[in-house]
Length: 391
Ligand code: RFL
Ligand code: PHB
Image (cartoon, rainbow, N blue to C red; front, side):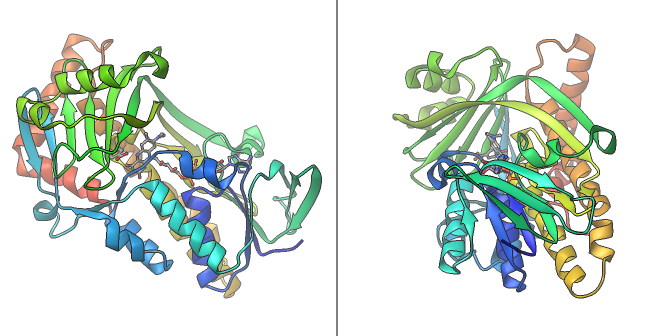
């Protein structure tokens, strides 16, 4: 088999890249280790920046998102019992975010691929990368017990944090930067109306909580929890009770509970691998970086990486290697700003039992400053809606 770009991973970064390349007439094959149902069963992101929405429109997959997604012009930060409104729209000159589940977006991208008759190999096992430091890279994989090989011009490593692509790079060619937090998020999805029209990020002495949603009838809630917690120990009733304790009386009274559709614990991590290009292999999305979900940036960064990568590859086939030569540097400038923002939101809103009293007080003062200063709220809003692209 031969293709121009072999894409490893059918998460958002691999599928958006595939769609952008298809639109540009560049041939790609996507290899995915899991089944489509497994990929669709992972409940993750919910908030898209305007620039990600624009990119999905450009990729031709924006129709259902516009029909069913929810435009949000602001969100609340709850500290103790006091709500502070962050007017994203007013503070950023009219920008907003789109609430649309990663699952729905993935479904739209899968359907677009199928409609266009593009090749996605699901349950591709033992994917391995060959000769990406030369001119003729190859990717091999096992499907139904048979080994296949794809010859290609480029490999796009879109296979997430635990994927094979980053792991295939020689150790001395890559530098990892990491910060691990000693808590996680316990998430619950339910077919109940959201507690509020906008998202509520709650800082509470019992720990952070987030009230998010997928639609007017489907809610997504998160609770900060210790890494030692086990999902099995959290009955739905226990989850709802703990969430209610972390909300203000108005939200607690408005909370509609119901059976969970999904519950899971995600550890929080900040991680960046540098560089993101190794010869003819490019890393994109979670394969290259992880942010704690507090700033809602992970999926958005995946989209911005593949925006840069698709343009770079289009430029390459048009006769210029400038885009691929600057890919890593341009992505990383945007990534580090999102890393900073996600780390900062995490520090401001979570409970850090190990932080000494002085540091704790400084963080509280910082949050107080941010919430009560127009400059503070503006910097928060500007980063939350997403920074502009440099090009
Ligand atoms: P993914 O989604 O992990 O997809 C990678 C795909 O590669 C496959 N794979 C392989 N395929 C072939 N061979 C191998 N050896 C392979 N190894 C892995 C995997 O099966 C998978 O299908 O990475 P991608 O595409 O880069 O997308 C990244 C996003 O999924 C992630 O950043 C976001 O979900 C993060 N995130 C959020 N991002 C936002 O922008 N806004 C949010 O509101 C938001 N909320 C969240 C989040 C992530 C969360 N968790 C669970 C980590 C909330 C949570 C709780
Ligand atoms: C979500 O809806 O899953 C979500 C929303 C905002 C975040 C993180 C997750 O910051």
